[in-house]
Length: 467
Figure 1: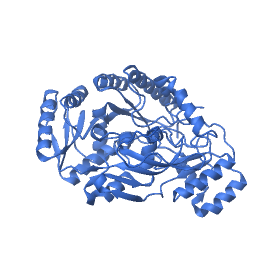
Figure 2: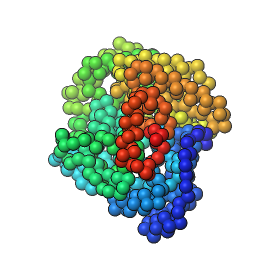
Figure 3: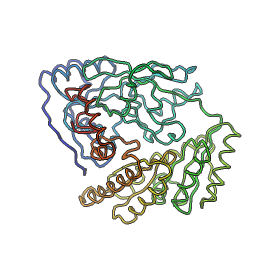
């Protein structure tokens, strides 16, 4: 697979550590090639880089035991969830132990009267909502993939519902964390607000496993709306679709979800998901609320869409129809990459203030039209965040160079608009130089925090920035 990573310094696992891990974890300490490969790969263009071993943890106590053993041997640990790792976030670039949290997958408590729940980090988003559905509650953060809650917290995920329900920084009330020294701390209680000391919860959310290992997450939940209605609307132009979203928000329409897909992405979606939507710039909408409130929202958005070159709304009101619609959106990455046989994907994202969104997308679309590498645009335009997916020939290094240049131009454009180099993918190893360009001296303060909290550089070393 194409792509490069920083290898950093690696050291072999000491025989004493191997023996201790074998004794403590038995067959959940693994060094087989297939397992190592699974934990060293990502969903995108980064080259696979193998850990020295994989440990599957069942409990907080086992995470503590692993951390203490690795700290004594000075061996790094990289927490691992579902392994999407779009910016190489979970790549073990300095070897060590990949700590697989997928078997810590229990819902520990649901406090329906308080609208919150406590889960282990390996719980998957979709399974959590299945668990909650008979209590009239749901967890709204939807990054597309059926991600683990721990991974979503570590990367500060957002997704299709963010325009109304916020991102993981809004959804996480409290965390249980194992520190690099093997201590267990709790960052907050379940109260909805607190002025008690530093906000450690938000420090850990988005830290990509570099400061601590999340072992429990307390999440904010929401009541299932009385009425949920989804719609698809195609447009004459990409600009008309973006303007419709911006104007809807300016009119205070509380859109639950609004996703944009350009014409090329719609072609890919139709082929992959066997649909027959117009192959034109398209918006996917979802409206939540009472029946009368949803009807009012719909009428306002339909009026705006019509004025901006939108066609008729295609409705998906039955649960199975909505599921089919959103599954097609969630699989858009695979649809785009597989438009080209044997290709690999490079996914990137930026986020800009809403007032600059139409301009940013239009200029990016023009860049893509002049490129030799196939690419699509899609994203969560309700909060100014959109993605570009490139479909790259892994045997053509020149294509990687071309995409890197286009990606650089996209990020420079977003930063010039006072936006960010990543709305939700994180920094990992892919956007470290852009973090410095975006935040300057603030990155050194991040390094100060990392050095103070993890002086051995034990947890996910080489990510977000170079020490």
